[in-house]
Image 1 (cartoon, rainbow, N blue to C red):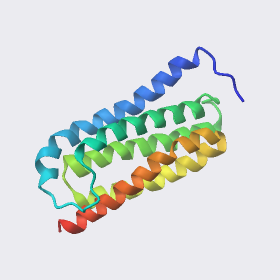
Image 2: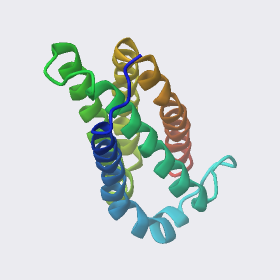
Image 3: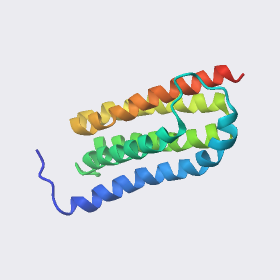
Length: 162
């Protein structure tokens, strides 16, 4: 197992910061829509209370950052790491895009399409990350589970609000 070096602390902090920043960007579109547009939608009985989302996402973005760090510290010049980092970037961009489409544009259908693409990209990222670092792949599993739940929630809201 690789030893953790003191210079890695900066890399870990930067990786977490970038992921949390993605969440912050998404929240710019999400936060104003929650008490207005989102509150007016019919939701399924399993819809969590609004206060649950922020702590869950802050935690998931931190786990994403740690996962990214574990992979990137293996050497960004290696082709396999470059592919893994690219996949990670795609899924992170889709994560932000979902907030823009679902909450910003207020499109339930296009939000569902984006979140399905996000799940596919995330699953590919998990598989590639797991080959590079088992821990990195495992750290993304809660995100995949929450993303699957969010996809079901998005689809349910779409059906309840034709």
